[in-house]
Amino acid sequence: MSGLPLLLRKLLVLLLFLALQTVAVVLLVNNSYFQQNAVMRVVRSWQMHWWERTSSWTAFTNLRKINEDLFLENTRLRAEVARLSAFEENLLAETAGRMASADSFSFIPARVIRNSVNRQRNFLVIDKGSADGIAPDMGVISARGLVGVISHVSEHYAMIISLLNTDQRFTGVLEKTGAFGTLRWDGVNYKKITLTEIPRHIEVNPGDTVVSSHFSMIFPPSMPIGRVLSSSLRQGTYLELEVELFSDFKTLRYVNVVSYSGAEELQRLTETEMEESL
Image (tube, rainbow, N blue to C red; front, side, top):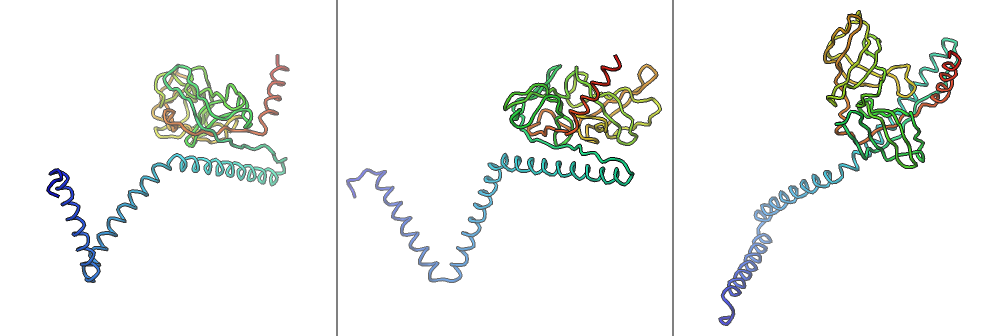
């Protein structure tokens, strides 16, 4: 051993020490109940700590899958709520002696693969297209409110005209009073939108909720849009409201495309009425 390099000799001595130390600890533990319990407590503590870290890491790496599962579950629940609402409406219609409507909303889940919020005419792209039942003029919603309307469709992708588009106009309703007006974006703040043409006699307070209209052919009724921040009188005839959007367009990952079974028939009826009035 004297012929070995100094570093190697020190390493061999260290390994021998560790081996003897391990043997001593094993003998001590095996021959002492008290020492055995003490060592096992330490081992279990380390084991629990390791399991906790492993579990946290596994949960972190599975967040995307968990979010997708939750989104699909929310879509299923939303469709069930729409079905039950239609069923309730039909029961009320039958009770009142009216013909029950067979129209209903259904939802197609999709993932946002492209998005913009810093333009005057913003848009989104989703990973579902005509092969999945998507068609132009369908409404798009998120878990927190309105998103926009389908404009162009390919087989596997679709483009959405965002609510954050200065050329778009939607109908918004004050949930508390039922008064409705026109929603438009001013192209400045992606978190805010303007609701105009509210009659001046309508009482409006900060915090009032704005929802989608019951007259819409593309969005389910009473879908949340935002809350009123302030109001001002315009031209002495109507109120203009500043509305904070519930949806954060910068963090949109998943959406639902709204399919309304009666939309095509209503569209034909509307077009016929417009042609006859010309």
